[in-house]
Length: 293
Image (cartoon, rainbow, N blue to C red; front, side, top):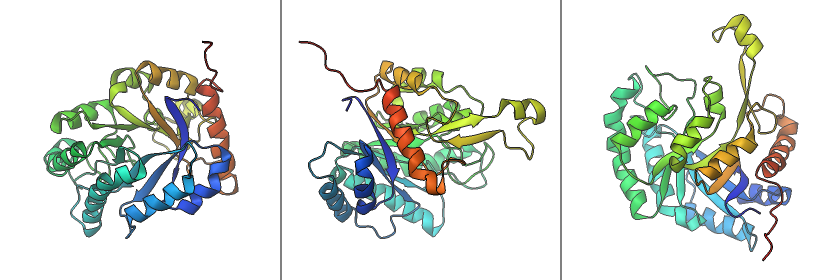
């Protein structure tokens, strides 16, 4: 195992699921909730996960909750409470990163959501700072744009700057992946060089861009021009990505975000994920070989 970068996968909050996939060789696990903790006792879950891992050199990379913490619905209040609880209990899992979406104020463009963002995340960033926890926003656009949305603003570098300026803090950064940039026809590589110090966690997800479709139909047509892919099946050169991450000083986990590939899905889901695991380990440099003394 390389000491600077581990390769793992996203998992649901279920110690038994983790137990079943440990033998495949995953080195880290990102525990993920959707919108709400659903009554989950994080302290109990953490104990179950620690018991499952036992004495193995495995790590919980993040505890994540994806929802709209800026919204006014009852479920959005649960998302905010989930952020607080995840921050408070991150140490129980042996991790120091809590990740998710920024949220949005439905019906408003991104710039007009910033006051609400400051109202919600100002205290959360301080809460996290006091507990030695870092907050990482995924760069997923959830098929939204500048003018309206209900999930996430942290999609492109221009907006990252706005967010970091609105709520300053060294513990505020990104849960980055190339997929969401590729499908917007952005080059992800310069982002690593510029924002490497802000990349706290990496989702292992890729994309395939059908340039022949773009040339024939453009990007607004019934013919799909891009697909989310599991690493090893998409367009990204993960050897270059990991090299750039290392040059930027990244030390952390790349966790595979499965359940999106249009080919390696259903009965082939874990086949695709294990292929991605082995592919990323090779792109990381293969087996770690100690230097002579």
